[in-house]
Image (spheres, helix red, strand yellow):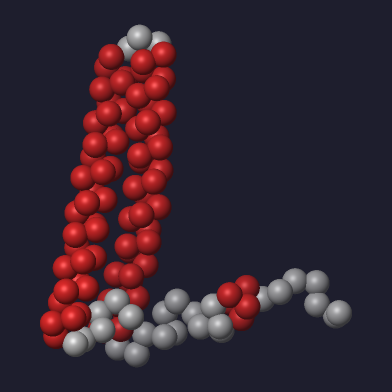
Length: 104
């Protein structure tokens, strides 16, 4: 074995780079939108966990303002996730009706 490290791009992504697969503006937008959905899910998770921790900390210190801020953050995260989820399914319906691959 003459290699100490493995090139992650070749092993995990099949040698394809994030923007090298973009053949035009349409495919570039598809790549960006599909990755934006993943990023939105990760942000949702962090905001939801942070809001939950703020609610618990506010209740533990008997501070209703901090608990309310945590509840507001968690509620905003859930509403944002519902909007992102609805947008994803609207895109899926458009793909089904038109036959155009938007997120692939």
